Amino acid sequence: MTTHWTRKDLLGLRELSADEINFILDTADAFKQVGTREIKKVPSLRGKTLVNFFVEPSTRTRTSFELAALRLSADVINISATTSSLTKGETLKDTARNLEALHADILVLRHGSAGAPQFLANQLKASVINAGDGAHEHPTQALLDLYTIREKRRQIAGLHVAIVGDILFSRVARSNIFGLVKLGARVTLVGPSTLVPREFEKLGVEVSHKVDEVLPKADVVNLLRIQHERQRREYFPGIGEYIRFFGLTKERAKLLKADCLIMHPGPINRGVEIDSEVADGLHSVILNQVTNGLAVRMAVLYLCGGISA
Amino acid sequence: MKQTKQKTSGAAVAIMDAEAIRGALRRVAHEIIERNPQLTHVVLAGIPSRGVEIAQRIARFIHEIEKIDVETGVIDVAMHRDDVGTRSELPIVRESKLPLPLEERTIIVVDDVLYTGRTVRAAMDAINSFGRPAGIQLAVLIDRGHRELPIRPDYVGKNLPTAGGEKVQVRLEQTDGEPDEVRLEKS
Image (cartoon, rainbow over all chains, first blue to last red; front, side, top):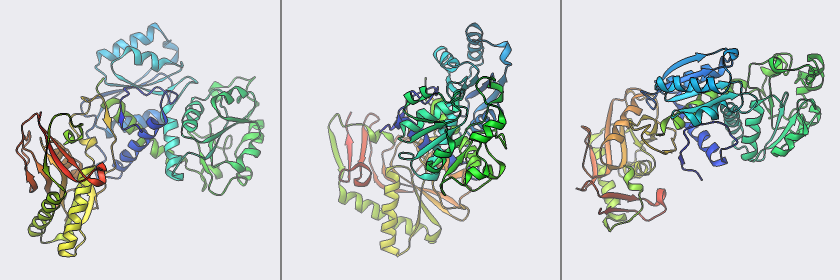
């Protein structure tokens, strides 16, 4: 059992042990409670500077990190850059130098290239938190998904989790797969064969192309957003066809177990991957995910930003 | 306070056994009763992990003596400490639990060893984020001196003069799985 945290960076769930993941989730419990206090702010990161560096656009993740940092008393700077002006390599190195010059203590990075956070983590003394890198990992999203499942169902081991949608291009799916498998869940990936190739079975999960067969057995259904911006014609069957075969319509929702949890990382495409009635229905824990995201990010910033490099 | 965690290396001298700890905490319970006529407004809030256990024990003594159940709570100070960023590993942060609202209530902070006073300062900050209690008092099993802040305890199980290099080790059955004991380890 891990009793101490020693990492300065959070780059992905692949390199974390089950104990480390549980350590973050336990820490998040304490920080969730801070949100219920009269004064919702603790001095843990007072005097530290956090840079939110989002090369890809994002509102909810950036805002969640920003609020988490403010509740920990850190100072926050937001930098965004257009994807076109930055490429990996030379320019990222320049970015790193600039951030060092600002004496940033924590860098939250979203980047279009897989491995960019790792690259900067190796260069910088500052803590680097991956807020999504290409189709690689999005660890804090997976942690908040794990936290929400654990909160609702007490434990993750033994649960059957279906992840539905565009798995191939999804960093959320990848981080979830690593985390869920480590914590002992059974994972089934569901989607069209072009977006859910059989190679994923190597990660210790099952692959299905028939959502109607999986839904009745699932304890948790995590729906991924159809990323229109990443789709190429040859992979994606077209919206109408996707809804017909994979969309969680209200008819299809009748197949679900009574206590099944419906999750979605947002933003929701209502009427595409999920019907409005289902997104707002009893199974849905989508807004709990948002609240828990704040607690999980406070825990991650506290742990990675709180140790001496 | 965390000096108590180190493994024994030098010669350790037994300072208190289970009976002495029992007697000391029972006396502290009496003093708390004497100073706080409205015991229903008192909250014994322990600092994890041994402070929480000591708070429970004091609450049981108060119940034995006065037949009143005083409220208990937990104050985790980890997120309020002033040395974040200077340690190479971080311990787990636990949830703080205090009965609300704090107004009208007197919080008695309970810990095993009082040393520099920095943990107590962090505990007072943590309490203030929950509200504004009528008062805060401090109860410790051992006061070993060497304060770095203007803080003094209201209730002391035992005053133990120490040198800076010495370590005070508290062992409690519920938190450490060892018989109750206080030891002083010479440097």
